[in-house]
Structure formats: structure tokens, C-alpha cells
Length: 83
Ligand SMILES: [Zn+2]
Image 1 (cartoon, rainbow, N blue to C red):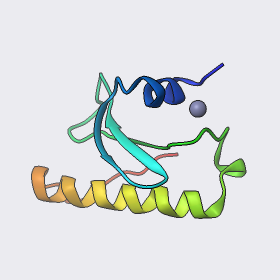
Image 2: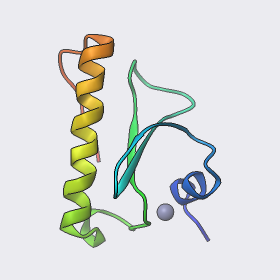
Image 3: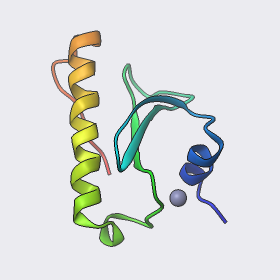
């Protein structure tokens, strides 16, 4: 059984905003703040402990790219990154 993120990736139904080779970023249906974005690995991993370091690094590269876009488009002066 897929997790919710794998379901979104398989169905392509999320509001995708960016992607790279290992991760995808999308806007949630009920954002908690302007620019609220979720970045998830394209392949399923149960958590940070079973995610390969190279996938984590590539995912964080996408986080950085999305944060830069928030700075440019929303004038954000900082970002909160939660795991
Ligand atoms: Zn999953």
C-alpha cells in the first residue's frame, strides 16, 4: 500500500512546483503559511534513517532551490525547514 506521497507522485494529482532527479516539491491543499511547500523523495523511504545520503543531499538541493524562489517571488527573508 502506498503512502500518501507515493500516491500523489503516481497519480500526478498534486500542485507540483519543482522537481529534480530524486525529489519533487508541491504546494499542499491547505498551506500553513505563504509559500508552504512540501519536498519529498520521488521513491518511497520510511524516514530519514532509511533514505540514502545522496537522495537526502539531492532533496535538500531542491529545498534550497524552492527557498530561493520564495525569496524572489514572495520576498521571504527566511525559511523554516521541517522534517
Ligand atoms: Zn511513499
